[in-house]
Length: 310
Image 1: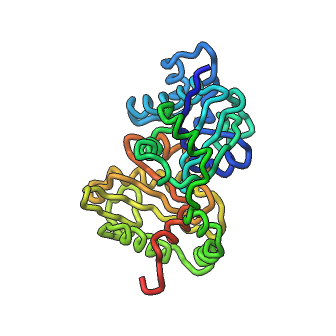
Image 2 (image 1 turned 90 degrees about the vertical axis):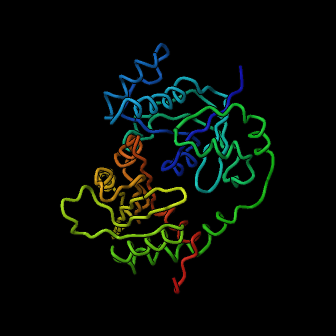
Image 3 (image 1 turned 30 degrees about the horizontal axis):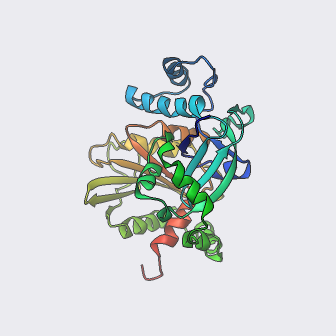
């Protein structure tokens, strides 16, 4: 059997995937995607009947990723899954599963895998592999990197400073501040500081903007290249999931010409987003929406180096 490799995005599902030796994607409400005689056109019909897409282009992109995952990956193939901690490599150990118990968490479509190496620093990978790992598509082929993937599995490489920091007491300290010392307005100002540190010109649109569409708490404008990012910021009194309303608010803001945002981002102190929120953000193409939950927010704060003098 020909050995192949695939890049699969598991963002938002990494904890489940690592704990359960699996690689999972979304589209849990679309059933029958692994039928042996399925055609790509039939798959598109199944997906479009389960989910709403704003354009034929976004449907085609989703269908392509789903087809590769459900129809082309086989036992023995290699998987490289990029996360914020680095690159993670696995080998598929069994055929695809549709797990009814994981529908609510949008992880029903999954492959059992053996994780061979976790948290490989991205800078140990070649520039082409790093570029492929940055693809927005959920599943793309990466067979041309087989030799490099095998090398990365064998080598220890450099320790990940980001991972070491994230496992330190600093994480708990920042989490306590987020939970106990910041109100919603404070959190918006914190995000504004983080965005400003990334090189953007920051605005905080008025809350009472007349005839506004959607909602943007923080607006960051970059000039080289020129684009604007709108941030919806959610402070939770606990660590419950952030639902799809926050995603819908930023999605609606794309239609407000006064904001003129190119990218939307939802930042939350919650540990995770609901499956409906993830699905709405995933299916938002051609609009680009990124979700930043609690762990990634803490990592952002650590990386930016916020201090009392900021």
